[in-house]
Length: 170
Image (tube, rainbow, N blue to C red; front, top):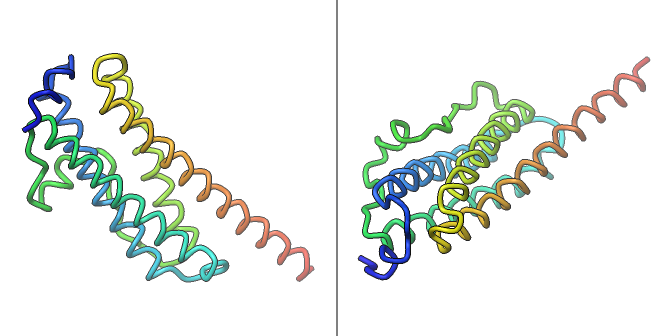
């Protein structure tokens, strides 16, 4: 337990640990969603998008490491049982209902937007009160914003490709 970490955090530490455990649960679900989606995905641009989704998965796992470390520094216990992830997470994990690339990307986009909201809340809660957690939340949020942008770009590219293909067929 980090006594100094708790001392310098002028927030309700128990509430913050709950927020961080929810974020941790969401990171594990996001990791799996990216990882399994990359492996199941079919459709145009799959070979280009797959390695990027695996990179996003690795980044989600790195976020989980940061969050776990902060929970421990604050004297908390990270969520231990994977069955708790879906109970604690606000950002849901959606099974790929269809392996088509656009379905996978839309599911990941929804997850990223939820994660952005989660880390914005943590950043707002800790701003000026817990600099370490605040910096971590902002760092993770910035990476989630990059993920959102990547996914939006891929979806746009696929739509354009489909439109061009339709024009060629006419």
